[in-house]
Image (tube, rainbow, N blue to C red; front, side, top):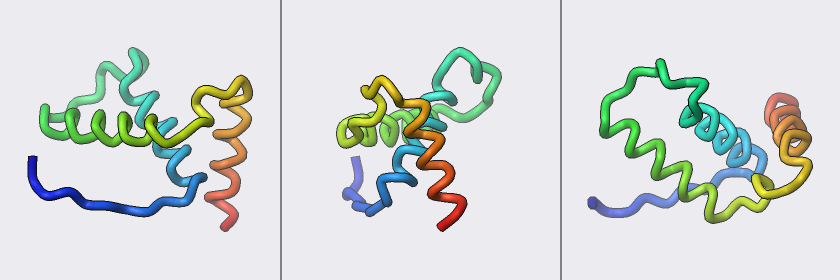
Length: 75
C-alpha cells in the first residue's frame, strides 16, 4: 500500500460518516454500484473508524448518531 495519510475529524463528523458507511455496507444498499477499489477504500475507512469510536457499541447508538447529525448541521 502507498504512503499513509492522516486526517483529523471531529467526533460528530466521524460518527456520521461511520453510520453512513455502515448503512452503505448493509444489505439495504446492495444495489449501490461502485468499483472494487472504491469499495475497498470505503471499507478500510469504516474499519479505521470502528477502531476509534466507542459510540457504535453503545445501547443508545441511534440517539448518539442523531445528536451528532444535529451538531454537524448546526455548527
